[in-house]
Image (cartoon, rainbow, N blue to C red; front, side, top):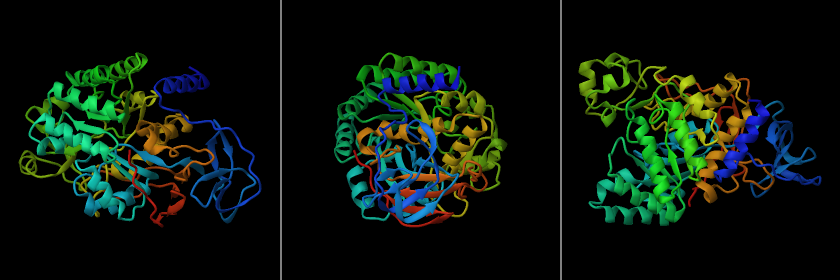
Length: 466
């Protein structure tokens, strides 16, 4: 299929899902004017084509475009790519966010992220969360979903859980999130959660029920059935590690068919060929070696060079140690590369660096987006297609709460990421996840420079609420 034909088909499919592709705003003539800041000479995918254009920031932190713009300050970014700021729709900092958010945000912004939304977990008390965190200074924008796993642990019956979920949504939570593999839940109860998501027009985020070869597609079917029975917008978290690890083509076909029938089902992936999770969770229940074809020595303690033994596995099983499986367990060409061809698939990190000095966190918490851009360039995927998957597409899932973000158009909010496509790459590793990405030249949040040339600057992030 020719590239032009593919892009046209992608745009038409996205339009049918009510998920906008890169917008093509009408050009407005810009009078000669002086703005607080102008980024000069950068390369942007603007008005549906790559062009060199100056980008100005007005006093209200909004974007202006035109080669005759003048600024009180001008930054020359000749040859660099100007993109909407990257949106991490599946960020994760839900353990002790009060003490870890600053570190978490530092490694996000150094990866080009301007908005980190915790839609895989989040908070069980969204009102208090937003109130508390809005009083703090943030490098990037933040937001949370309703953390159903925690709510189910505090409310003893379904009626009580539903009341708490609605309270969270009333207080601004961006969606309803649940992890079925980690906390199995009756289908009838899930139907009630999907009903509330539909009532509030918020997405429902699901970590699917199964991750084994023989049952993973059952989980995909369950998510689609929830969307069909309740009309909720459904998002399947990290499809390549839970739902499409072994049968990605079939998983994508199911989602594609569901969307063709008028449902709205989206998904995300992170650009790594291995997953990592905590030893205490159900994924490592008896039979894990047979399920994934690995053994003790294949497991790596993240943030170190330690490999497990049967003895250390038993010891760490009682702790909160995060371990990574071997590279290649999820072959990129058979999982992620297939998913990225679909207009309903975007990038989401499912991670976050919470502690300094070789954190016990998957490298995706620091390098997901630079790694995704590098991978797209390496496999000859059109850069504008990947940029859509890290900007406008994730923004569209949250809808009105992200209005004016994730797009390059006159008057949009100035959340911007400037990068060098020749050098962009993630540097975080399993042994040392706490590393800034390369090639991220400048990051702006709400019109302020928050990261430049490898250093943090101002803090201007705000809460994103429904």
